[in-house]
Amino acid sequence: MTAMYTLKRGGAYDRFLMMLEAFLERNCEIHCLSLTPIQIRNPLFNNHVIRLPFHLDHPTLTKISVLLLFPFYALLVGWREKIDLFIAFNSLYAFIQAMAKWILKKPMVTLIRGDFSFGLKMRDSFKSFLWLNKTIEYFGLIASDRILTVNADIQGKVMEVIGNRKSIDVEIFFNNILVPNHSMPMERMKIRNQHMPFQRMRRSW
Image 1 (tube, helix red, strand yellow):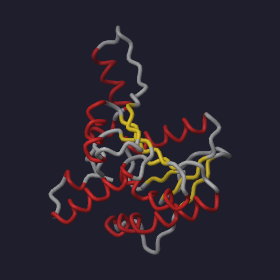
Image 2: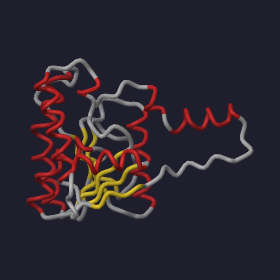
Image 3: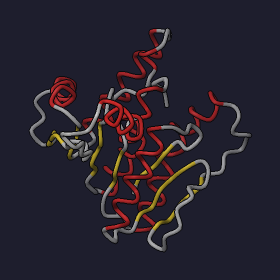
């Protein structure tokens, strides 16, 4: 089971779809919470679209609702569908699924591909928001049973946050992007832009 804030499209969303497709290629049944339908046609993919009591063009209300409502939907769907594993696409989604993971006593794997906060500290935010960001970041990470990062630098930062928690495995899972040795600089840039468009975007969720 996993979840995604589908109102903001871009590189992160594209990578999320690639993750779903990778699981489906291995015949894994997927249950995914989202705010809008995810266009994947596969009998193993179950998209649970959460309906909010207001229009989705209110970003602040929508984000607060995700934080407050998604944990309960994750618990309800996880219990009803008898899920075996939670997959979190960053520390925010790990926080959202933490309650369901603990109550249902199921493992959770969290994928960290970049800055593992969800962007509040990247902007001029109030100190209370920065504290909230750190709290969500911390509880999301410690709720995880396994954390996969894309490089050693991020692995070290994650281990600094979680401290000496031996029950959490923090491993490196390198991006599987092959670049031929003979490729020209323009070809390398094309591959980089194709697989990492999120770097050109503002880091927020």
